[in-house]
Length: 111
Image 1 (cartoon, rainbow, N blue to C red):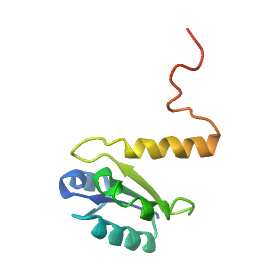
Image 2 (cartoon, rainbow, N blue to C red):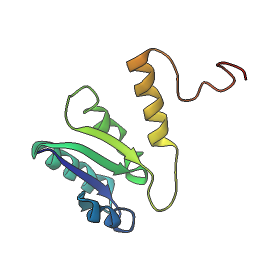
Image 3 (cartoon, one colour):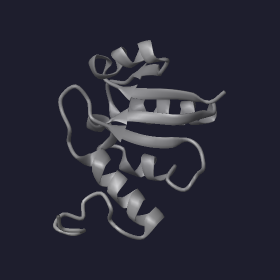
Image 4 (cartoon, rainbow, N blue to C red):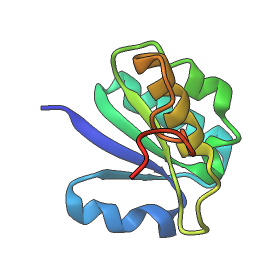
């Protein structure tokens, strides 16, 4: 069975443990990178990274972009949404579908 993990500051990630997500606290981008590589080696299918850390490790995250596993997904932390994760989602959707279906404001059928 595939595993799901999250990397980030303890306040942002601890609550997800009750949902079966493996929590991995990291206080620095260097520590988060080390944990990311460890989880990938251990066969995790999905690795969430709190945006505060993810914005500081874009090259390492990009290294997993074209691999089938793990899916590395930036998520907002307790300090709020930085927009980094949603920006990545927009790019992924455009690549997969060939069009912006998430942020195509002002387009579409009128009612």
